Length: 402
Image (tube, rainbow, N blue to C red; front, top):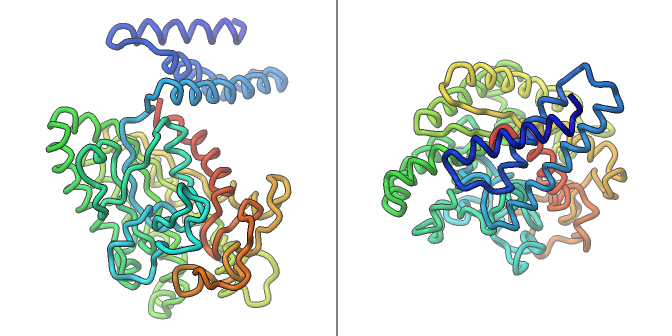
């Protein structure tokens, strides 16, 4: 059967099924077509030219889906709930006594109203861009902020804290919110959400929300590699296994509290971060290969763990977002994606600057155009790089929203 005929058949089936319980919208046509195309891409019997056609249709369908969602002012998930570290923290650290803050210029200079919000970026995080793609016009607030109340809770909540890791000891070293405490805040959020939405709607939001988890980088860069007690007691492989054990327990706890759609970021190419090159590269040119190897080994372990969790936990959809490869590709060949600098950040010298200690309004040498830089400071991607990462994440995570 020709591909267009199959697409039409699948779309009609989707309409019929959806009519039984809801008012049909074009959004759902695209979801059903998209699901078919994903299956079609796996069909090894397609010739190269046919497969290319399916790829193009796949991309076009997703674009139409996003346009449809935004034009109808609907969202593909009811809420987004986030845990983790600085790549997803939207301002919780503004409300705790820690040096890991980003609530001052030049952070946020390209964000809405050009104001710092606590995001470790010049503008939007990859998760902000993902939220917009899914139809959200405003972002879930940091849970510790006054904005995390009333109807704002319907959007979800962000519990992330810059400097946090899977290992609670990592968070304690930085005086930030441990992952275990973030989970306690989430339980508190569930109670508050029920007060605002009613128990029935709250249960529906909890079940259908998109959950995002981003952690692990701080465990290695801000703990393992600089802690002689730790790196003498454990090999990198052993420490990875320890962290994955904590990850397993966290996902099981989250599932037990009602989460069913969970997206988890892999480790990025830690050896390519400007700060890592400065601190651990010594005279090695390019990325620090041993650190990238450690990150890749961790990523293999967490992917394997996620596969087992999906088999064990009823109704769980879990995706490990590969952040390593798309960011590594940007760093290895920045010009291909329109960047000119990938070895240092925009803020200050770009080699060590992060947090208020070094990246601030008085930092000498801060670039005028961050869109040319893969990194904003010596650790975190710029908004322009986050756009590339977000594009990759949304494609990888389609299973979580369909």
